[in-house]
Image 1 (cartoon, rainbow, N blue to C red):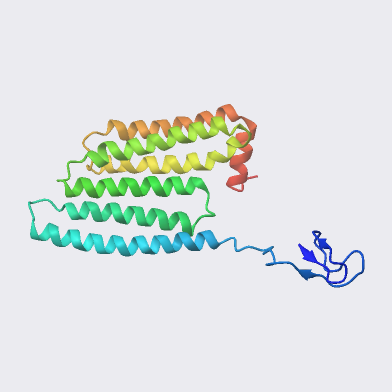
Image 2: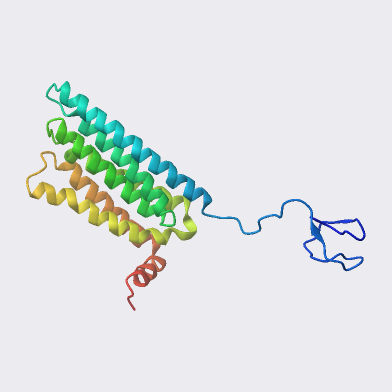
Length: 222
């Protein structure tokens, strides 16, 4: 909004001259910033994350000291430290890679949670529940999520085919761990692999030509 010194009228249009006398207009009040800093919010989030990192380091240092002084056979400070680290890495990844797709964020988040629970399992005595149950359950949860995404995003369902292939590869990990003797309850590992494979096959078979075209495009096949 500008004001003409000659006419005394207020001009609300985005112009530099008065439409009546053609004199140069004066800006009335502060000029509006037409090009705001779109990363301002991102900078604030990064500052908050750095503050959280500092507080987390101080907190974990204090907990390690207390755990050492009042040690009762359990390294509980390690569990808290891993949880704090997981929260920090999740926040830092989300902000630093805000433009990355939500699919990659899902994979990174689930992988981090599985590693977190694996560390907790190891600290608590390595009972094996993280590998036998948590890892396959996380894979199954992601597969179910992909299925719902396909149902609710019918216009672009074929874009999830590559994600399903990635999930098949991830589902092979617990099977390999079982073959190496690290698992005592392999049924859930094979169940997760079967669900991932059949979900992919179902998408390809039901999707028909549209699915095969998407696969050819993804893998640069003629």
